[in-house]
Length: 446
Image (cartoon, rainbow, N blue to C red; front, side):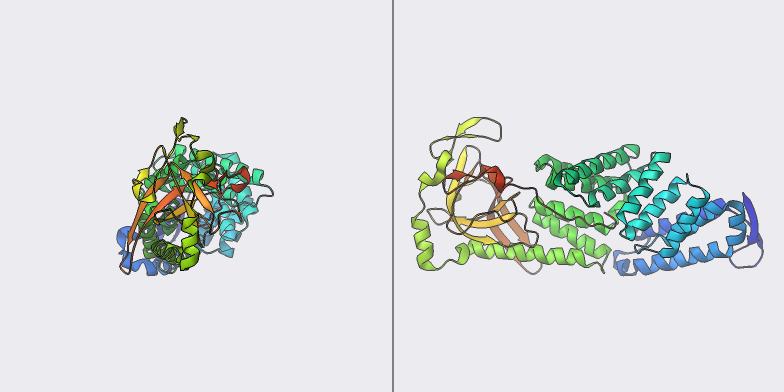
């Protein structure tokens, strides 16, 4: 439906359509989502202001054409105005009001339900957001509702661990559906990556799931809109950190900072990671900083009989085979998986990390070589202490090498995905030692 009004310069009457106003709002979102196609990364600090200014300009146009536009299609007008106001990251009360009006006029308006859901999401009203996306899906299956519902399900408070797992699984399924509807949509791929990351830590610590997470993030980056999102690079950094790809984690955090200079989380996470690397390197180099006599007594007490079931016994390998293990000194470890081998030593220190994941400690062997060990999925409050003897079958060695403009970090580290393979003080660790890790991806845009 068309209506007659004045042009933007108020010079002459001009026929304006709802479609034309819709195009104006689309241009606003294109300006936001493709900002760095037309601006330098150095302009990142101006982006929010520029988007806000563009939003005000768009809303002013909508206001001048309010009467004829409302007469043509009031529900659509309210939606367009609410959507324009909702373009910024902050909650906007008028956007909520306008979108609610649109839905009163047209309760089956799917786009309005989705926009109102995002409005509630910014308001931290998870229950209301979930209701909006669910209602939209009841009217039409669409990628926006699916991917947003995936985010909501992962953030929704749960009363039991079982309920939490159910929400994570359902959220993963919704994200998969969104990608299937549009395999070229980077935002859906990014949310699928976040879903895999949550699944890895909540349901199954299978490294393949972490690989699927990274694969989804790589797909997301092919989309200019998704790749311009600082949240994507922040969440990718979290995944890299748990893969112990520290250089790539730092690169992703730097990218997130450059895209959103006012956002403190990537800067804080970077400082935490660098401090962690510094602490591990220092404690490996100085063998836990134990004093001379205590250190000497600890090394002298290393006895391979404390290998427990691994002492002359058998072990079910990563390939499911029953094998005998050869105990080797730390210096004989090869980078990567050391099949049919076991290492044994004494704990000389543990290292605190802000995330509490992984549990990190250093240990020495009988020839006084010191290495770091990272163990994932220790239950809360569980771990090892100074003086414990620890045996690790088929150790996976990483030669950590990280170089920044200010410092270099080099040390050897063994990764253990589950504490259940460890033998501590001659005994296998029990199932009560293992628990799922908890992590946080960035919530607002997920």
